[in-house]
Every structure is written in C-alpha cells, then in structure tokens.
Length: 269
Image 1 (tube, rainbow, N blue to C red):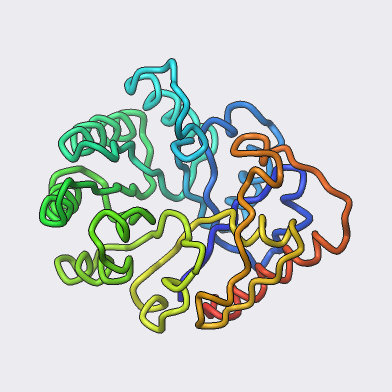
Image 2: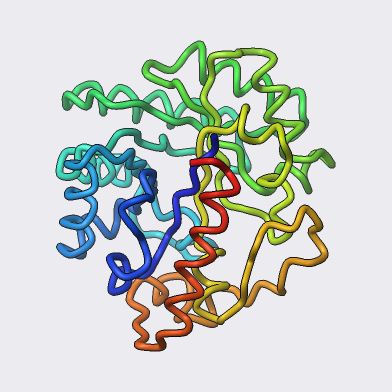
C-alpha cells in the first residue's frame, strides 16, 4: 500500500482529515508558531498515526532565509523534541550533493545527541544521475539513522526519467530502503502505476486538498490528461497563507474529503 500525507490548512484539519488517514507530514516552523497545529498532530501521534517532520523548504522556495543551516537544524531538532514525530526529514541542498551529505550527517548527529529515537529520511541530489545514485548510497550507508529516501518531483525533469523508474533503481540497490515521494506531479501518474503500492511507502502533497477547495474532483483515472488543471496554492492563500485558509463552503469541503477518500481507497490504505 501507499499512504498519502495530505497537507491541509490548519483551520480545516479536523474538518477534512478523517480518522482513516493514518500518515501525515508536518512543517517544523508551524510546530513552533501555531499551538493548534502542534496539538492536532500530537493527538494523531498519540492514537498511533505515523507523522513525518519536515522543514519549510517548499514554502520558503524563492525567499531568502535569515537563519544559517546550523540554526535551521537546531530549530528542527527543537520541533522534533516537542512533537516526537515518527520520522524526520534531514536537510538537503538541491544544488549540491556534497552539502546534502554534510548537512544530513550534522543533523543526524544532533538528533541522536538530543535523544531522538524515530526514523530519519534523507533526500539525495546530483548533477548527473550517477551522482544522484551515489549520493543516495552514501546517505544510506554513511549517515546514522537513515532508513528512508525521499524522491522529489524534479527528478523527472533533471534526469529525463519517470519518477517510478528512479524509485526502482533505488530499491534495486537497497531492497530494504523505504521510499517517500516528496510531492505529487500534476498528472499523478506515479501514484496510479500498479508498482507504486509495492515500492512506495508514503508521499506528501497539498494538491488533492487544493483541487477540492477549488471544487475539482480528482478521481484516479489512469489517464494523466484527464486530471483537472491544478490551480496552485495561490488560489487558496499562497504558499504560507494556505496554512491559515478558512472556508465555510460545504461543497468545497465535501470535495476535499471525497478526493482524499478516492485516493485512499485506490491505494488500498
């Protein structure tokens, strides 16, 4: 099976995520800044859900950050100590494989230093596909605690390969590695392939929620061209504003819940 971690606005969490959703991805910055967000996911962990703690890399894309990497790692470690997540995503640099390994190693050591006992996910990068695979091997073999690899949407464009082919290669080198897809493509074909359920543990996305809030149905069709146009988070507040988006539109909320249900049932979760 493959579980989707649906990223939803904080005011709508309890209205669109049912108790049947058992896997989640949360943002470290919001764990610090919003007690409602922290409390909601603490309760999900208490009931046995699997919760992944990530940084705000997507939300901060294109924006300068005032914090150096050491401070960002400290912030994520602090968030992990507050939340006690099932897994943490180690920091990475999309443009530099060596820095990705260095930062992941430093962060892993810090998590161990402060007594974190959960799983760790690393995200490989490379200028070439060979470097990408070599980085993945180094992260798995050389960084303490790494049991999961995160595979970004961008691999399709960077290496001219279907993302599921990248997953197959990573699994062929280490059959025991767990795979998480970071984001879902707008055609969602990687989720609709029969091999996905066997190879991919989890993925995270706000897309099915955003589609629903815009009243688009996203039933799995096995035909990418039949997916509706993706309106983006700008339609519901923007990258950061999305997390505080509110609506009383019953039809929109119903469509979000239906989109989530469609994909949960399709992926046999």
